[in-house]
Image 1 (cartoon, rainbow, N blue to C red):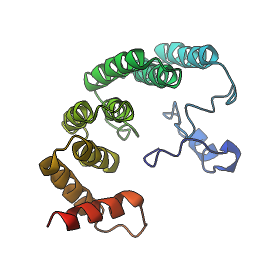
Image 2 (image 1 turned 60 degrees about the vertical axis):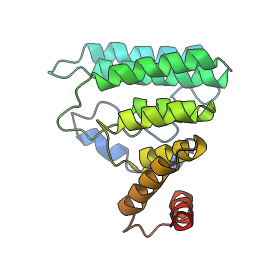
Image 3 (image 1 turned 90 degrees about the vertical axis):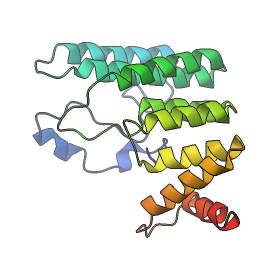
Length: 203
């Protein structure tokens, strides 16, 4: 998810079966979340929305102290936003993702589970970048840092947005933070090379 490689072969992934022994695992997020669903990658937008609605309804009935259904509602809104974007409904996509981000910000994280793989606020910023609104994207990335700081994708997105918006000071700040975060990385990534190039040119 972090590398935004969403399309994949579910049959080639391993380790999912082992989660069946954990009673508290209620949902698994795969890299091709928005493309796969049990319905298949060619399912219609309505079928995919209905699949998420069914999951949400099932989790509404789960007993416990945590509102899992609200988490699914956030993901439903996020998925709907990207579906709208793919159909060229750009204003609607921003509206949906902003609503998802606001709901996500107002929702407490489960005390045991890790944070979101791709927080809704960060995805809103990514969407604004796709829509060539880098200044607005930068604002949303910076808002996302309040609850999800020091994320690789967030720092790179903020640096890129700042660069495109002509804010060299912010770009320098976030590229530098990205390099500090990845200083022990032994895997080549284009984002790191991009950051090194930018920082070296501004010295």
